[in-house]
Length: 211
Image (cartoon, rainbow, N blue to C red; front, side):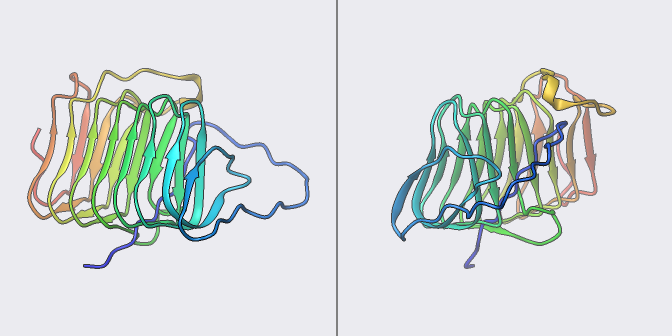
């Protein structure tokens, strides 16, 4: 199935300050560019890229872009926000220190991933309303974790995540340490196991999530 990946960003528990400045055009690139991404939400990258790499210490904001290869964050990247963007291969994020959100900007449409979504050793993780050809894998993260209303051809694995580590930017939320897996559909299995005794909220998944 030909699929697209749209990803959206949310900075959890923070409020962005409004600035009264004239709008600045978003960045664009010629097709085939290998993008090293370090920008802000005010100036997202657009256009077509062969691949995207997020260096240590950087934040990356993609909006309405196309990535024909992979999106990869190196250990120590700060934030990865991919909004309304097609990724033809994989998203591989490891060691993102603040926030990861993968899904459309308003989480009200059905974006698509061409292969896998894998998020490891990061902090806050939100994946919502994605259609994924292969697997979603979320492991060894230590922040808020939510997977909601995703459709996956094979497996959803939320395994071996760490005890919740609160950051000031996380804000406050009832049962903030809980892992939430709700309204997801997988072709094979949904596993939520080995998550350091964190509370689990598992609701309305098909098949029923094993824990």
